[in-house]
Image (cartoon, rainbow, N blue to C red; front, side, top):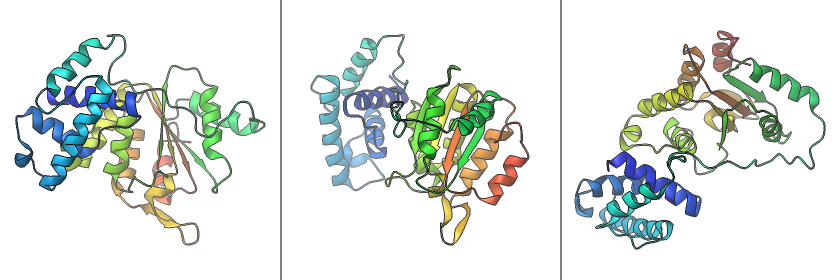
Length: 275
């Protein structure tokens, strides 16, 4: 078993059992332990912190895998888990994402807006931005749209309003990659552009509909002073590459209080793929 497979299986097991993904330090401990390193030989964090996180990781895996897991036997435990998973269900497949705001029982109206959005996605728009002031139901509108679509695209959602996420590309990009069923590597952390390429390849080759809420969290500015460009320009570069590529089987739907002028200018160059 290689390191990527071990991390993927462990991440899927933890998410199924606890609803949480592996943290960066937990991934590092798994990878370095597979390489035969002791806690003292692992770099990047305080030694005692590594030991504490390692002990917590083995306990979490014990609960998730239903057997006692330690630093000495975790490889065998993960291999047994891999063999027990049905081949029809990949350990990398993300679980279904429940809608956070849309409730079909209480939903009424907005037929015109829904028709406009449905027309845009039917034309294979790659990036669809729903822009409006806070509190008017942008997230619920998009979720209602997704609920009525049946084009085979798999749905996942990233909420940038999560206070644990930063405005840098790695923070949100790594969270999105996990929602798509993959685990960021240490190389992704060291080079966020590599992470950006992994996300592009995943979306281009697959058939996903990704909802990214509260895009304004990535921007410089506020409601009073106005919203300017991205705090991390790699986000804008990533969206531009998504629009510019020759093929893309997925769609990204953004909800945001505002769009920076630079992104609107980029979108205007790719009118068939941007709405």
